[in-house]
Length: 262
Length: 276
Image 1 (cartoon, chains in turn blue, orange):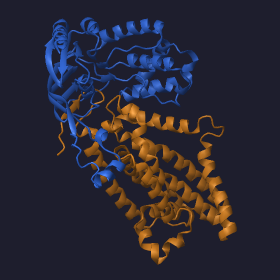
Image 2 (cartoon, one colour):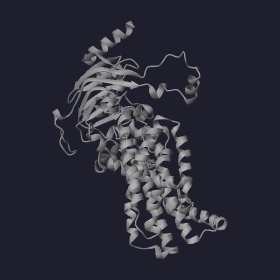
Image 3 (tube, one colour):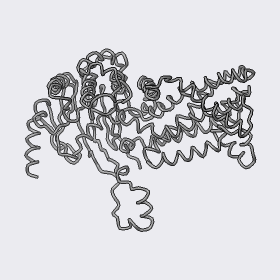
Image 4 (spheres, rainbow over the protein chains, first blue to last red):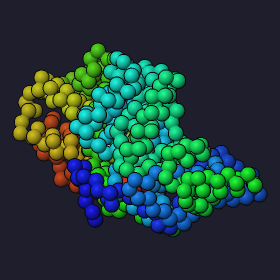
């Protein structure tokens, strides 16, 4: 097995995503499981006529995909088509049930910006925790801390517990952390809208520079203009399968055309 | 049949295959800081802070002992140390199941953001409790030195072994509890009753000879909680090394619990993310 040290320089061929025949069955058990009360009722025939719900739903079906160094891949598709599931499978958060995924490079996923804060810890401490979650060393995080604090622009609140923040301040800090502690492979679920109007402009500029500096970007979005302007390649996911793969202009055109017919 | 795909990451936080079993070590910095965060959260805005970990068992034992002296006519000096050691050890053992049940639930924010080994979170819970155990032990050693200085001796050197054995026993218990709680939301209510029952069936506060009665002795001999309480007290209070029976019993339960916890974690790891 190839071994990497964090100090190793990343060569172009070292940064890639490869999916071969990936299948992901999303278990419905945790959602569909009834309560103890309904279980007891069913013992006495209360649920005799009920149709047994399926145990799983196939969220990804035989997905094969290769993304190389420098590519910016956009994923489009209707709600529930499997876009976000594909992104989380690439991040290794959702275990796959078939096929293989091979990633070269440090993965950074930005899925839910507010998730993962320790409310009793200060903003500065949370910068550390978020970086450590990504597998960065404390010294690497310390070298970016000043930039994050400056960008978040929340003043002395940075040394107060997160629970004292307004929701806008928490989002600004989360955005700053997520975009300054950058990985090689950047996975984004929708473009992020953070904070007030002034911060939005700053955030947009930061997102553009982040996208440009990522070695690989995979972006899920419903905004076709974003896909066209940011990405160099796009795929259309439908029913857990890739049904179109090509330039953003071509894929978006096919997607909009087919969607209009439905 | 469980269907399995292959996920390999050759980046700096490599994972996949057998690496997953040891991956929590790669997140040791995160573990260290989360334990610190837990302790700060527990004692934040408290004037005495972590000193409470030292004072609380002493105050609890004092109150309980005062009641016991007046009602049951127990000798003060030995009984307060007995209660103190019982409380400190029980915080670990009961906590492994009660607090361990929430270990994965409180880690949701991390587990939904990045590929982090699930085992890290029960270890975090037990490590936080172990810090309290260290402070509680210091309190117990201090009170023993003051009240029964004759108990001091070379057997106190067993203490690091007691800590290690307790932590090794508690981590798989917390892991088991965390998976069970995520999978069956009724678990936490049920386990608190079971632990309360074990509290009465283990020599935490009530004197040890009660548990030697024929009606309960068979259970005491098989109860790992009773053995761990004995292992803690024998070197500290009675100036002799832990018995082979107690160490062997706890070691056997530890091996079984690790096997059960790791196998269940392996089976459920493909579904756990969907249980949140």
